[in-house]
Image (cartoon, rainbow, N blue to C red):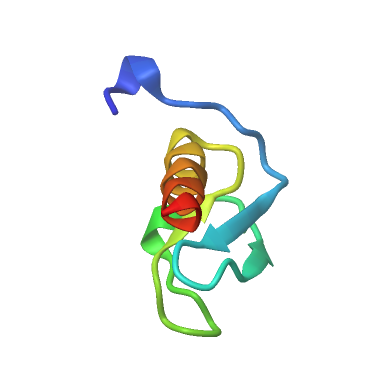
Length: 65
């Protein structure tokens, strides 16, 4: 994402694991993409972000198959 496309999701919210869907509160100043899941070690994305929406679409597609 370019700087122009950056989402502003605010200081609250959650980070969600792309593997196990474990949720942890977002820490202000630390991007979720730089965090690892405390449950499984997977990557985290910000809940409600474009990355999270893509993760949900992929998960829905694999569930249908």
